[in-house]
Every structure is written in C-alpha cells, then in structure tokens.
Length: 423
Image 1 (cartoon, rainbow, N blue to C red):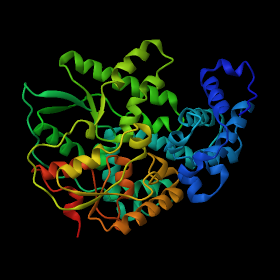
Image 2 (image 1 turned 180 degrees about the horizontal axis):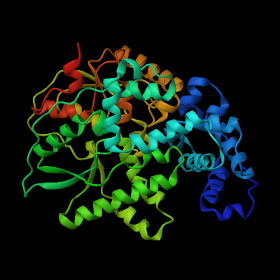
Image 3 (image 1 turned 60 degrees about the vertical axis):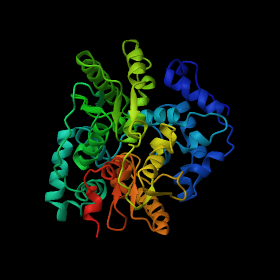
Image 4 (image 1 turned 30 degrees about the vertical axis):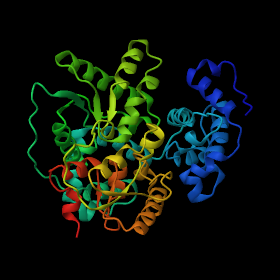
C-alpha cells in the first residue's frame, strides 16, 4: 500500500510504525471474514481493510479527523482476529492504537461521550470506586438500569452481577510455591468469587496466591480508549508493585484470572518501549505473567460433575495471548462435557468498555453468540475473561461461570454462584 507521509511526521516513532504497517497491507480482504463488525454490518468501512484506508488518510493529513473516521474507528472491537488472519503480517493492533491516540488528541467528543469515557477510565478502573458504583447500581436498580445510553448499560451490568458469598480462604504455608495475584479493578467489584476459587484451586496444588498490593488497574481500559499516558501510569505502578513484592519474598510468576488483563500485561514491553528506565523492567515483568489455565494443572483425584459446558474462548486469549485449548482440556479432565461454540472466532461483543460505548453492536454480537449457545443445549457457559463473563450474563442466557469456579467445585469447593442461582 502506497503512503504519502511527510518526512517530518515520520520522526514520530508511532507514525513511523503506522507507516510500515500501512505499506504492508495489500488489501487482499482476507481479514474481513474474521471481523465481527464487518460480518454483522456488511459495511467495508466497518472492516479492517476499510478502516486502514481511513486511518491512513487521517494520519497523513494530521489534525482533526472526520466524523466518519471517528465513527468507524470507534466501532472497532480490537478483537485482533484480523491480525491473526492477515497473510502480510500487518500489526493492526498497533495501527488502531495509533489511530485512537490521534483521535483522542485531535477530536472533540460530545459531553455525553466524554463523561462516559471519564467514568470508565477514572471510576471503573479504581477498585474501591468500582465497588461503590456496583453497590449503588444494585441499590437503585429500578431507576439506574432504566437510564439511557452508556450509564444504563453500566448499571445493568453491575446490577446483574451475582452477590458475594463468604467462603473460608485457604491458609498458605512457608513451604508453598508463591505467585503474585493481580486482582484488577472491575472483577473484585463484579465477581470477587472468581479469585476466591482461583486461590482455593491453587492452594490444593501447593501454590499460595498472594494478592499484589498497590497494583490497581492493568491499564487496558485507558489504552483502548486512546489514552496511552494513562495506560503507562497503570503499567508502571504494577511493575513497581511487583518489584517491591519481590524484594520481600520470591514470586515465581504473576497471575491474573482475566485474560483481557493478561493480554495487556504481556503488552507492557511494547507500551513502555520508548522509556529507557522502564523498558527492561517491563520485559522482565511480562515474562512472569501467567493466565490461570497455564498454571492449574488437573489434580489427580477429583469428583466428576456431569454438566454440559459451552466454553467461550475470549478474543484476548485466542488473538491477544494466542493461547487456546488449555482451559477446555482442564474442564474435560475434571469430568465436564465441554463443547465448542460455533463461530468461536467471532467476538461476543464485550471487548472491555466496548459494550458500554457501543451497546447496539455489542448486544447484536451477544445475541449472535447466544443463539449458537442455545442450539447446543448446555447447562452453563464458561468464560475466563471478566468482560465476556458479565456481558453474556442475563435472563436469556445459561448460567455463566469462570473455569476456575468449575475446577474448584469439581475438587470439593463450593457450587459456583451462578449455578446456585439457576432455576
């Protein structure tokens, strides 16, 4: 693909990288079949190929982008299915990140949009604030869930989250292996029982999951809104928190039970690549990051649970981390009947804050996913990512559980919260 950037513009490393990716694109269109918005809407501007053309024009011209470009870039889920399908190796993730940063810097959004994005970045990304927001949404659910647009969507997500139940936590011993558990921001507020199940499961394997203090949000929410500097602040805080924890006791790895967060943690070397004081530290940290299914090998003795489970593979797992298959194998090993969901390569519509900012498209993708699930006639859906987890929940869906909850249950732990509430 031919480009026409000014030489001065290419002094910016982000624009230089964007120019290389634009040149690599041959407009073959193979990516369109993997793009959820193109499959759903059939509009070339809502597919990777069309967006790449608009991004090129925006970056070459500089200044304020057109309303059309903003609308169609905003509609991208960043699921990255296109990056995996691309035969030319175009790094679409880097390209769309640069586009979003340009839009954030040069486009004036409406007050409603700015307000929603501020809540996502500065309220939902703060664990204690998120807990208060969930409590308020549940308390005032009859009113809050009827609010229009993004606010109503956030309230409905918070209101339908299962209530917390208190379960005894295992006590680690000095002889156990130790990992640092990153709890994140939204998950402790919406589904704290997930990390409780993770902790119990690892305890049976002789691994003590120790919460990483002063860590906070991984930065994914800010990053995908084009707020790179806010994402860097989150990354530096987590890397420094882990380094501080390492000085007190050696941790063999960093665990996060949400695949969306794991993908963001793995991307820290790229995020901090231009900062000499942090680059090597980010590389060392990312090398320690693990996802639950990569650690929790099946125990030798388990109680079989004969349930049919639809395993929803998050985009962050199959395209971000480029790992799949482990979670399904673990659930089968402990006795569950695990089935794949048709069109498993198509995003469910969650995509972090996407379901809040683009509710119409997100809900259409959710309905598409649930229609495939309904045909399978399963007892529950298992998803290892908190975003997909809460997006798929609802009265029109089977119970949604995290794989760690099912493994914990099969090994003698409590019944998963969603299954206790199921009719």
